[in-house]
Image 1: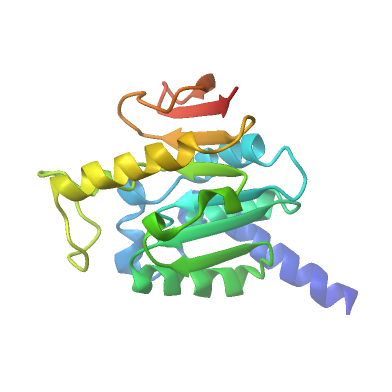
Image 2: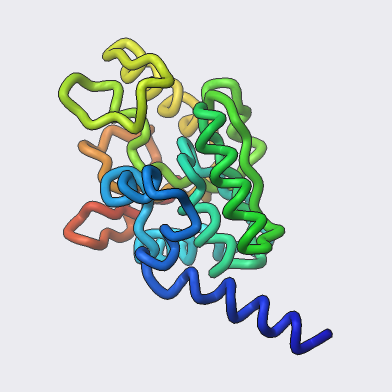
Length: 203
């Protein structure tokens, strides 16, 4: 029994050896989107380490896509709970299938729009600029959702207001986010990858 469990652990660990290995969890069309739309393992590892310092922390990925951040974070930070919200049901299904293959228990995915969530259900947040594809001239994941500048503005406004209501000590990690217009009280305490990856906390 122990040998079987050890083999399963080794086989799942291999997916986290590189982005190429991890992306094999998904079909080819999804892999082709990885470079632009899915969080690199290096980013996920660093972000999760910052967000999960509190045991049993509840961490939300806003626009979780196929779940790569949540899955990698859950693997490297098993004491924290990771949640992904994604409006495309097809991507959520890919995330759940990968979760099942990786046998991770501390992660869950929901199909829906983040504007309907109560942020105070969570402790900390990860944001990989999932609103950006609403802008004209940007590369889209697919044509299954509506895109517009109005939605971009609405989503940014909603995120701002939700974060504004969070208590002191709330952590936020952003990746490839243009600008620094965060609610009052959120301060950058660290940056990496030529300032593409930023670590903030509300103080």
